[in-house]
Amino acid sequence: MKGDIHFATGNQNKLNEVVAILEAGQPLPWTIKSADVDLPELQGEPEDIAKEKCRLAAQQAGGAVMVEDTSLCFNAYKGLPGPYVKWFLQKVGPEGLYRMLEGFADKSAYAQCIFAYTPDPKTEPLLFIGRTHGLVVPPRGVTKFGWDPVFQPEGFDRTYAEMEKSVKNTISHRYRALDQLRQYLLKGDVQQIDHPDVSKTQEVVGP
Ligand SMILES: O=c1[nH]c(=O)c2ncn([C@@H]3O[C@H](COP(=O)(O)OP(=O)(O)OP(=O)(O)O)[C@@H](O)[C@H]3O)c2[nH]1
Ligand SMILES: [Mg+2]
Image (cartoon, rainbow, N blue to C red; front, side, top):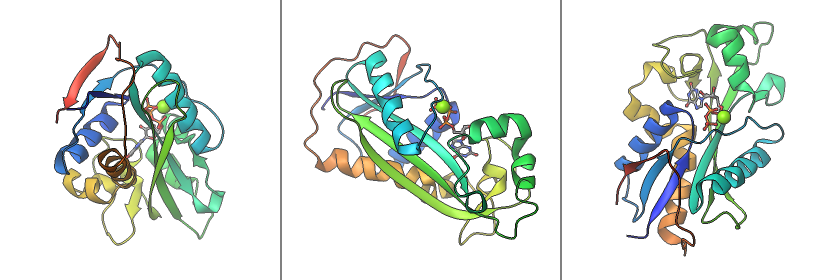
């Protein structure tokens, strides 16, 4: 047992998926704890956002920390709304996201998840990027998680929202990024330096 890694997020749906993905794969010799820290919505390129988010989370949480930032990127919009999809979703909902592409023949998009991991607050975060390509379609399926009803991954005739979670969690942007982080943690010589001191933490995946 190597210690704790805090997954800092304010999004319960992300946490549920991360737990399910980690539990379905090769076990990690770390305990993953959730840290409900309030992270700012930063601006810029997704890679820079994920790194800075990780630095801020590590300062709050101490010890080893992972965060993720998710983008939904329309090819017709050269990658927008990208990391700003959260605001678009809040204002116009999934239906409005689909309508943004109404005048465009190209409805292709990709979902991108970037995990950033640091073993301690002083170390530059490492990035693990996962993309799933697909189409933006009129909403189908139960709206439980953000834009899931309008994203239909390549090779499927169902949207993320219509799929079993166990299927989404083997092809999703989140799975693809988290699996790389898992491989890194299993192979890498990762050492924990500080002991985390977060008040709002909860063990979610044990070794
Ligand atoms: O339908 C969805 N399927 C997904 O798989 C998914 N992953 C993220 N999202 C949404 O996209 C925005 C990302 O913004 P985001 O990365 O800043 O997340 P967040 O602010 O909710 O949490 P966090 O930053 O505290 O971790 C937020 O609106 C999330 O709800 C998803 N929606
Ligand atoms: Mg956020």
